Amino acid sequence: MTAMRFSFIKCQGSGNDFPLIDARAIVLSDAQWAMAARALADRAGPVGGDGLLLLVPGRNGAAFGQRMLNPDGSEAETCLNGLRCVARLGFEATGLRAATASLPTSMAEVALADPIAPSVVSVSTFTRAVSTAIGDVGLALPAGEIIDAIVPGLPSARRFTAVAMPNPHLVTFVDAIDEGELVALGDWCEAAPALVPRRCNVSFVTADARGLYVRTYERGVGLTDSCGSAMGASIHAAALTGRIATGSHVLVRNRGGFVRGAARDGGIVITGNATFERDAMIDVDLERGVCTGPIEQVRERRRERDAWTIARG
Ligand SMILES: N[C@@H](CCC[C@H](N)C(=O)O)C(=O)O
Image 1 (cartoon, rainbow, N blue to C red):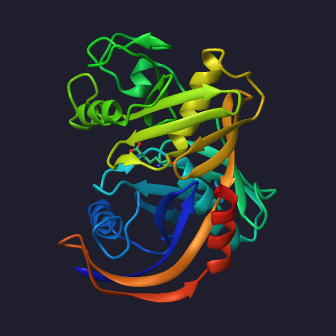
Image 2 (image 1 turned 180 degrees about the vertical axis):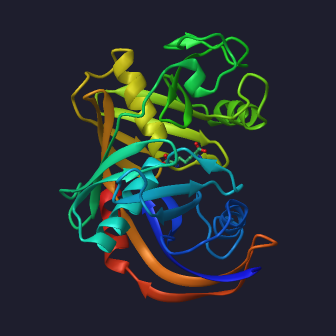
């Protein structure tokens, strides 16, 4: 099969936008899903996004599952902004309001939450799959942890905390975010050097009385408006380094919006929007990894979009 028509929802969590497909009954190979991601998440294409989200059958007793493919076709261990959107679709499909969701290498608790702003559909996620073991973060260094420390071999004099969510993150707290410096370091990691063979998400974070502000260079994407697992890793790093209190909820802002989160019960809880913007269909050539033909709009969800626009200010 080379051509396939996909129904999808264009969704976003804290401004991290994705085409989302209910793939529970779709059988494609990993290589074909990678091509679908390249086509659908291509910013220069008709849909575009920070990756492709799939609602898939749950494993190990989970009610449903999530897969997330980056725009370059690589698969991520998690996507926490995306998980809120996948969970919402899972709730709509199953009638549940709370569930265990499976991810490729971990599990998460997901639940419909009180709206974080008027008329903004909101979901909470809780994951215990958080680790600072160097092996889990994928750094080619002797076993141990990097917590607020210089990373040997990294071309930066800054102090980082290395966190697996379980996707790999390097987080550094800065007085002011220098995007040029962030992109240069992100590009270095993106080239999969010997120190970071699986590549890595990199975040520059400011912490003040309002909470955290996170700017992220995402693996497989580049500089992004928002990355949920980076916000989770930043909360974890902030708690580990005494910048926030364990158990207390903080506001975490980014260029795309905001979430609330806490380091709690040995894991990270994040509550944020799961906004469905429109429903549409499109043809994809799975051999070439490109969309063919125009988008067929099925449903506009203007009220949801407007509610989020007001909420993020
Ligand atoms: N934006 C996501 C993270 C997506 C995965 C990332 N690009 C990776 O490869 O690790 C999020 O919200 O967590």
